[in-house]
Structures are given as structure tokens and as C-alpha cells.
Image (tube, rainbow, N blue to C red; front, side):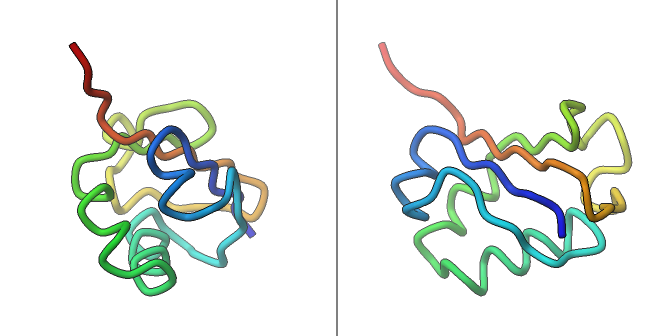
Length: 82
């Protein structure tokens, strides 16, 4: 199963640094995370940067990017501050 790593606010929302989810694509993974964590994660997933093995998913096939069992998916919420 692909490993999902959470950063910043998403660690607080999920209560985890990383989890494993059985998903065949980035889209399936996002759907699974939404089902697991509900509304509290949905608003972040829409604006987060997703990487697969260190490459931005948008540079691959976006949400259609296929995932393999050993892949590492990192999700970075937008950073704010001043």
C-alpha cells in the first residue's frame, strides 16, 4: 500500500505523521482520505500540494497519477504567515 505523509496542519487534523492507504491513483487516495477524516481534511485537500515519490503530482498526471504499493505520497497544505 502507498504510504501517505502529512505535513504541518494536516498532522494535527489527522493525528498522524504518516499512514498507509490502499489506492490505485491519487484521486482514489484523496477520496479515501476524505472518507476516513471527513470534513476536517476536505478543505485542506482541495488546496494542498501532492507529491508522489518527490515529484509534484501536477507534473505527472495530476489526480490520474497511478500509485504503486511502495510509493510515498506527501501532502503539503498551503503555508501562511506574515
